[in-house]
Image 1: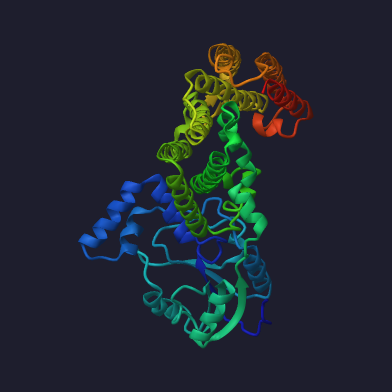
Image 2 (image 1 turned 180 degrees about the vertical axis):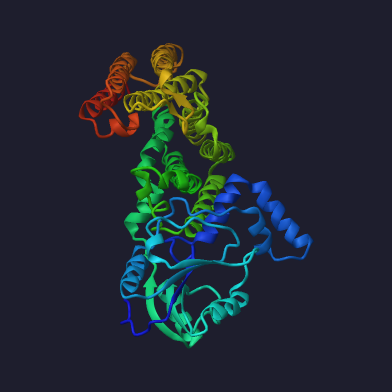
Length: 474
């Protein structure tokens, strides 16, 4: 990929854009829009009103930092080899703000050249750099940037098309090329998380209870609704990763996610999320007005959870329970079934218990790690008795409500040939809930309870037993 080095000119590296493995400027702007949307919109409005450049207005508002952003390992390795040969390396900070240089880059550079604030365009900065390096310099920058006048020689970074276009356009000696990594299909699967669509199977529960699956047209609507919900859910996972990108980069395992690691550029992920939301909602609009409204409510609640509700103790688990219950209401709307207060209340209590089980496990794990708080979740280690008490109470409440549902609505409706078999469902479900809470309290389960159940043989066996009981009842 890299051409043999034949030049000894000083290297001037665009900082931080060249050393960060992501579209840094777009990423910073996106994060600021999430954190401080009013301030960013106000800056753009000021630029339009005062007829100044948007870039200059944003430079006054945004306080950029590299943080835990992934670095370009290929470029750093090459710079280290050039440094070993005795070449001088300078960072050109064109942000107009002071930036801390990452520790692993500091030994490689001879100094940092700061642009005048606000950040100057490359054409204005060229004269200053030429004055500092009268004998010439090699500029290291992104091929898509305006670098026509930056240095007699260049090192280009970007996609294959961007590098080839820039090399042809510049007509300069290209000392080296560093191509952006291209995300593979596995990276997209990790970002979109289609395996989490298994949670959306809850949408088909009303079809089973009302036996709407016997009508092909109604079942087709259910399948299309499942697809629409899955697409919207995957899009919200992307938006959640966008909002949490800084926190993920500081996490021991989440830093390897496609967005946090820089494998998939944040702007591209944003476009995919927007397209997914538009597609999913469009499908929903063709199926049912009620389904579309519920899906919009699911979207709003999910975004609220990602942007802050997940940091409020107890409200976070209530939101999770509501999201699962919304899946059930979507199924009811598509199946043309009656909205059962007992069924929906059961779902709310049942999923509230499972969400609390996960939080209880996290609180216990934090206590063992001698951490005094779970600031990112709003909990403290002293909350363990509370999460245990409320979680087990809601588990028992859900079982009581299920039995009331069977007596008040399940048996009288006459849809079942041998309805007595349905009593096996709450009986087996009580064993499963007890097992979940036992394993969580013993700190032997370190996963989402539903994800755990899909891999746990005893849980799968109990699920099969409930399915057989339902089939016998029908």
